[in-house]
Length: 296
Image (tube, rainbow, N blue to C red):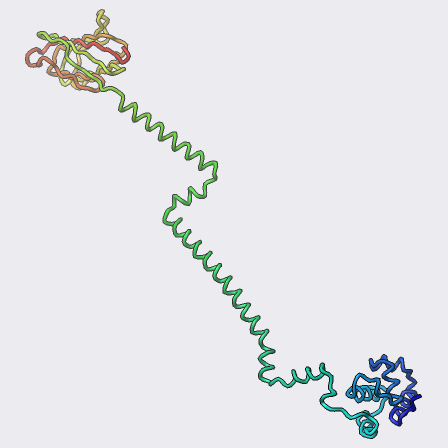
């Protein structure tokens, strides 16, 4: 059985005066109960190492209100001496880290902050790049749209309206093409002389669907217009400046008697009729016009 050492007795006496049990002391110091018993009994062999002896005694003394420095100095002969080799590896590593130069330590402390700042700058640079590209693209598109207003209207037009407009444009093109084709295919009116004898001249009108006779008096002239069966359409002494227009589309043959050819101008569908016989030779003339409409 181990006998309490003077140091152990001193510590145990102070504990009992505090009214603390070993369990309570263990809770305060965080030192296992068996080590506390070892300190009181002077059984330092059960300690993890010589270094822990001094450390545990220090914590024990502080917990029971004793000055640990005085105790360690007074009972140093009872306490096993320690060397650097007795220092636990864990504490040795901590000490080594503390020996790092201040400048290196400061650099290591600042390194995370520097990395964070660099990361933030990189993110801002990427955001700026994308924003700048989008703004440039928008400005470019805006300039192109300003230079081409028609494109803006077309691009902003609803799909259905644009489709309808395109369809209408195609229909207009087709209509225009049909009109051009009709104009190209439409035959040219032909008014030609078929017979001429003395003051009598027969004209043929063809390649047209209409037959309009226009008379213009450039002086006083008697005029009569009648059908082949002698039905009178117009008979009058025309004074200078008088005009007369007759629609004879449904007549196959019309006779025009001019009393003064020198003062009478005749037009067929706005085409001036040239007298085959000179008015100076026969002032009074009989003009027959035979009409052949298209499709006959």
